[in-house]
Length: 475
Image 1 (tube, rainbow, N blue to C red):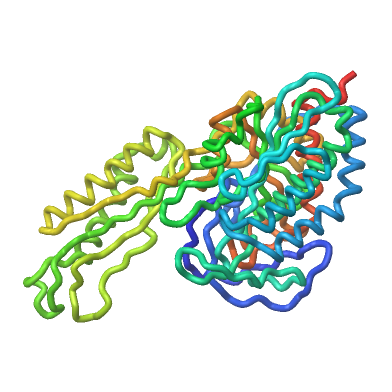
Image 2 (image 1 turned 60 degrees about the horizontal axis):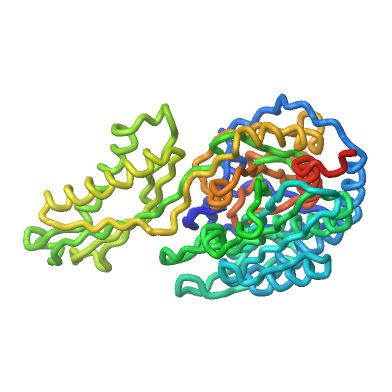
């Protein structure tokens, strides 16, 4: 999940129990980061819980029972992998240890492994022995966030590294440690049942989903540019994301648009420096910037049909000057745009530039607008494929535990994979039973906490979807 960290101090939420063991020492108050994905954005005191899905479970076959048995047998090791990765987190394009651990595991299982794809990514393939069938890609992201952990666990992260020129704490605050561990377990169970597998499975272990500083292009986009979907090209791709917005044991999905595009912009306003007691002697870029910020909000409120499709334009940073009595020569603003519609996305990007430049010029200044090149497009689940696979999710979740997720204005670079081939991206709940998912720390918070009992349903869901999509285990 991707959203730039934004400093804020939320009210202290209720704590979530981490299964199977946890310490109960208190947490420190701290800054939190925004989180992404529809299920996560359903969190919050005023949010509504997503409704149960009306999808009927697909009939079970003997292979499903065998996969479930293998999943339960590997659950303990999967949790151990997750804890190891959690205690040793690595930021985007720095996942050297994680990538090496995963590659060694896959090679022992008989996968053909290509490493160093998009710096630290892996592409692994396994051909089934159960007969001809489709090629299916499964994706997990491996990177952590520049967030200092404030969860009291025996395997809590104490890691620090450099990011954007600053030393930062590092934490798997988004749950990518869970994703990696689940796909490692998926890989082993699939290999164990290779004789029943039809077609070919391609595993994508991806770096830098949380994006990179200074506009650097990486993650899914770079993996595709470096041939992740070449030889063989998948017919479909599946992915999952653990979320605090659902209780452990609950799964969520949504056909069609499921995550917004994400673009970051910078506006630099140039004025003319003068003494604060003589504002007429210069051009105040701070005043110009304030006018620009106010005017930008009219793009969203007056120039687009927000009822037809949601979008958000937010200025999250405003910097200018370093003394109270000096008007500086420049000011800088930084913000984000979220949309579902590509035409809307391009329109707002154009209007941000036009509005900023015209206001600055009218106030005797100058504005430069730049959009970072590593934005994400909106992500949509293929409607037909999602409806086909939803009964598999319903079979795993059980009655009332499959949820239809609302749309949210957060981003996921799985969007690049699902634009290349039909895709399904689903949510896995990790909030402890008995707690309100709307009241707990969200993904990206330094207090984000995973109830590990949610990992097994995620593993089972992925295995069932593989079996059903490939037609494995059918006589």
